[in-house]
Image 1 (cartoon, rainbow, N blue to C red):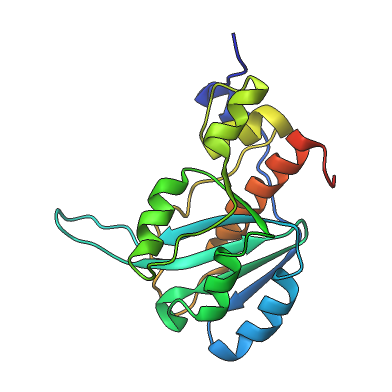
Image 2: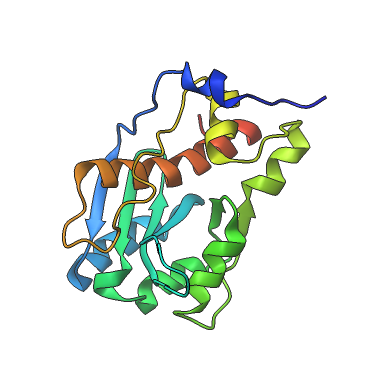
Length: 191
């Protein structure tokens, strides 16, 4: 029997906080610094956020793309800057490993903005199977490995809002950072 955890057990755990630096990229002028930093990283945590649709047939484009290192998370406001070539170059860079969760949905959303296929991605839902972890939600994997819970309170918030709230920024950063942290922990790379 593999490793698993219940929702009730998770509810008892302390909440994880991202203590690193969060950089919101909401103007193209901010891209160069972000790309200079991210393009030399061996691995990045990855996630996206989309404004929820509450009506049948309603659809929204990806509003936010997050890329995280151990200590910094960049939040790219795609609803404001589009999907610039500089960002796409990171997504298709085979030298940079990108770690995310449930990537099929993210890739489908990104495909609406670009025909280029993202490269060198690892989906934690598949990856954790090798380590005997049966649960494959980010919250459960993280709780099993680190004994802390990731709050999901901002998941259904408006990711296209004019300014992201501190709570939204923290939530978005944690999701990408946690993917990288899980991967590094399981592969015993940088701790």
